[in-house]
Amino acid sequence: MEGLILVCAVIVAAAAGVAVTLFIQKKLARSRAKTIIEQAERDGDVLREKKLLEAREEELRIKAEADKQAQQRMQRVQTEEGRIKQRQNQLNQQQSENQKARNENEQTRQQLDALRQQLDVRHAELEKLHHAAQESLEHISGLTADEARERLIESLKDEAKTAAQSYINDIMDDAKMTANKEAKRIVVQSIQRVATETAIENSVTVFHIDSDEIKGRIIGREGRNIRALEAATGIEIIVDDTPEAIVLSGFDPVRREIARLALHQLVADGRIHPARIEEVVNKVRRQIEEEIVETGKRTAIDLGIHGLHPDLIRLVGKMKYRSSYGQNLLQHSRETANLCAIMASELGLNPKKARRAGLLHDIGKVPDEEPELPHALLGMKLAEKYKEKPEICNAIGAHHDEMEQTSLLAPIVQVCDAISGARPGARREIVEAYIKRLNDLEQLALSYPGVLKTYAIQAGRELRVIVGADKIDDVETEKLSAEIAKRIQDEMTYPGQVKITVIRETRSVSFAK
Image (cartoon, rainbow, N blue to C red; front, side, top):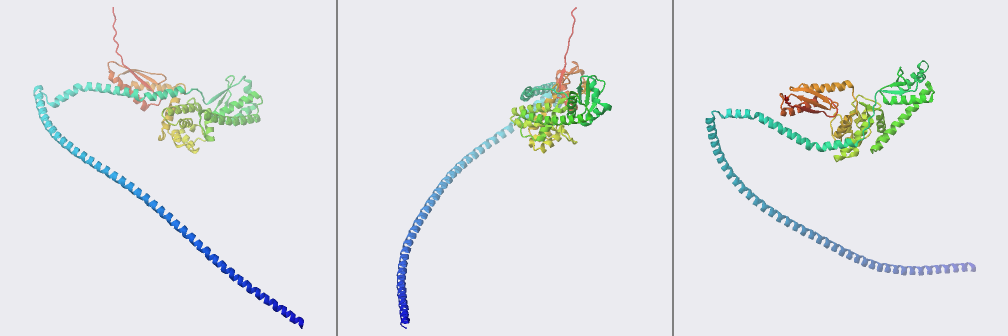
């Protein structure tokens, strides 16, 4: 029982201690909370004062900025007012000057009206005097004014015609000397600066051999070798009685070159049979194709042309094996390119574009596929296909007047193409056509009255016309020369230009005995 009381006393004491402890902690908490609240109130006052100060400073800054902007606006307004006043003064001054000018114009107009009235009076007086003088002359001469006028016209008609023709000749000579001087200089300089090489190509290639024994080996047993060679190359091989020669016939110069090189290798090797022929022909064909590409690249590098499409480079290389009127196409294109570059430089144009257009102007003659188009238009389509510039494409397509020329490069390419082709010795023509052209020239000049003899000289580039001295005078010779030149230009086709010289002379022969 005592133990239970003791336990209860301990519990009560503990509870009392806990209660006292809780009371003390509660008092301390209230004191701490009060302290915290007082500290927070003090901090709040300080922060509020700080914010107020910042707000006042911001207000002052904004006010200062606003004053500054207002001052700047005021300055701008004052500046604009000054400009407006200055402009107004200028306008007032201009109005004064305009008013002064109007006054002066009015005075001038009045003076002109007065002069016009005086002139009208003078004109009326002159009309009277003119009529009086005319009546007096008609009375003295016994002719009316119309009759006298007709007689005067008839008497002066020949003199006026001669004077007019002489005047026209002087004008033409002066125009030729002044207008063509620079053009002639450029053309001559361009021609002189281009190296000329002539390469003659035709439809046959002659393959020389050492002896007729090799002919039999090339033909083979029952003609097997020659048939295999023709089938592999596509070239007709003519073996006839011509000593130490075999003729390779075909229109494709590349195939003829392949056949020639293949024959050369077969003859040098000595092994000639169908299998060997096919092997050698394929090898030579690959070599020729590589040589074509290399020739195109080397040509482009020599001319300083960059960025050509590989297919265009190949077509340029193929030009080496093509000819036009006996003139090697690659050499012709190189000449044209150099001439174009020189002329473009002299005229202030881009020489690189001109050289590029000159090189590619005949590219339509060597495509692998040949559609039914003129070579100029086909070349233009190829250039467009391979992304060449529009002015270059136009120069290619228009160099034979088959389309409108839209760039300055087109007439340059056209002229340079004609210069390269018209060079004596550059091209060959059939003898019959050559003789016919000369006869046509002479007969054309003989068709004019007063012409006695005609001579076509300088390979048809000059025509000399001899006229009768009693039938045509010196003035009419000039007219005859111009008429013949115009008719030749309109009716005939010829390379370069034709010079017409009309000769009239009078010979007096006497004998002393």
